[in-house]
Every structure is written in structure tokens, then in C-alpha cells.
Image (tube, rainbow, N blue to C red):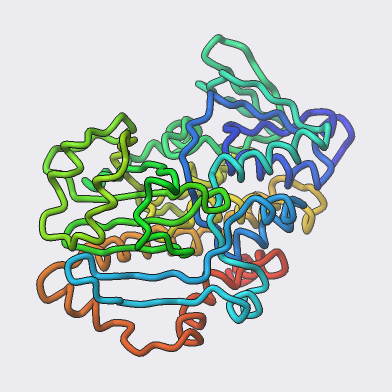
Length: 400
């Protein structure tokens, strides 16, 4: 690349987990980065698989993130009607040996903070908050974006990490969101208010007809994250608002008392109407590409949204490294490396939602699925997901 282009920074639309991870990956490739953030919506807990920790390591924040995480002993699924244990997967030493990193739960704000601190420490990342990208133009050597106040930012490429309601995606793809009709309620409960018989050091899920409930410890076990999902009776619009105790309690008829406690706990709830989009094969348009939820918004059933965004960022950096920072070749390689894997997450997540919410005979099939399965067989089934790392992140791009 000639020197005049290197004086332009890379623009990143979105300062969430994906945007910050992208900024870090780009700085590691020798670029200066400008992050344009409209103002973050911070959720509560997120789950991070070994693949997510491999991404943290590749971005130089592995120790930081591991220090802020809570390590679970197992993942467990129970039937919410009769308490039957559908499956239990140890996430112990054997799991770590197999995948080279732990499974953990961590506060979303702590992931964000770990990435933000690292990005600030580089001295190569400029932040503009309250800045919403509204229009994008590009030529052969640069991209210019305008914010809501008409201010222009020019860079040598643009990474659209602007989330599920991506403006970048709207401009280049313009596809509709697929509203699921599933509503997610989230809350954080202090340990002292959380039922003792559910204070497990685990990522736990209770699966029921047209609904499910999730709980796991946060911040050293001082709090518990509670997430419940149900199929709404209303016509849902995609978005977030405050939830009502009455609404959430009206949906969980027939659930065993042990799981039902979870619904009665929180004083306040945040309510999400969820959506995803159909997977697409093209994320890159000239010097513009997409990353994270902008590229492949998914429902939450695989608990992989943040991990996928960080994987995207690491892969983008590796593609640039492989092609000596030639953007045209690197963006093409990045897309080829990521499209099928992230589409698999979107589609698997829909399938998982169906398995979680099974009723009637389908519920009986679900409860039989993993009967007697050994930890090793569970690990084999997860190898495609958790076996990702910086060493193999470009493999899929070679197969086209």
C-alpha cells in the first residue's frame, strides 16, 4: 500500500463488542482507527465459550477477560414441566484440555470494558460518541461517512459493526429483519434474593412449551443473571422496552415451582422482542464490510453473538496480515472465511429455539435426545463451534 493511504485511519461504525474487537485487530495490523458510536445499549450477562477466549487471546486481552469471568462447573438443561434433566455437560479441566480455554459467564459490560481499555491503551484508536452514521460514499481509495449532524469522516475502509439495526447493512443490503415473535425478559438478581436451591455454578436452562428460562452467576457469584423467553400473543415489533411483571407471569402456566421462582424474583425487567435475518453471502461492498450482528444477526439460543463478533474481528485482522494489508483481497478472504460459519450459527440457533420450546410428542423426543450421552460425545458434537482459534480461522476461505 502506498503511504498516502496509510495516513487515513480505518472507520469502524459501532463501539460495541464487535466494533472494539475490530479496532484492536486493526491496530495490531498497524492501522489507526476511528470508532463512531451512537451510544451503547449494554445488556447484562453473556456466555463466552472457548472460541471466545481464543479470540480474546488473539486480541491481547485474554488475561483481562479471564480475570473478570465466572467459571461454571457445568451446563445443564432441565425440562421445566417435570424437572427431568435432559442433559448435563461438565465444563471442568477435561473440557478446558479439550478446547484449550474455559467456558465462562461474564458481564457484558466487563467484556466491553476489557476491549475498551485495551483499545485506549494502544493510543491508535479515536472515539467519537453520540455519532450515528447516516450516509456512506466511497471511491477506489477511500470511504466517507456522514453522521446525523452532517459531519464527514474519511477513512481508507469502513467496518460496519453497528449491530442488529445496522445502517451500513441497510444502505448496502436493505433486507428486512425477521421478527421471531419470541420475547426475552432479562434481569439481574442479587445473591441474597436468589433461591438457594438454584444457586448453581452453572449455565442452567429450563426448557418448556413455547418458553424457556436461563440462569447463571455473575460477578463472582454476587449476582445472578435471569433470562426468560416466551412466544408472544401480540404482534411484536423489534426492539427493547421495560417489561411488566404481569405480562411475564401470564406466560409460564404449567411450569414446575422450582423453575417458576425465577419469574417471581425480579423487581424490574428489560423486555426484548427478538429478530434475526436470513443469512447472506455478501458482506463486502468495495471498501466496506460488515461484522458481528450487522453481518449475521442471530437469536440468542446458541449464546454465541459476542463470540462470533470477536471471531469476525480476529479473522479480519488475520486476512489483512495474510494479504499485507491489501484491503480488496483481505475483505474478500474475510468474507469467505466467515459466511458459512456464522450462517450455521443463525440456522442452528433457530433450530435450538425449536428444541427448547418443544411441546407434546416433540418434547418427549427432545428429552430422549441426549440420554446417556458421555461428556466426550458432547464435546465431539461441540468441536465445530468451540474448536475455532486464530490458527484455523482462515481455513474455510481456502476451500472455495
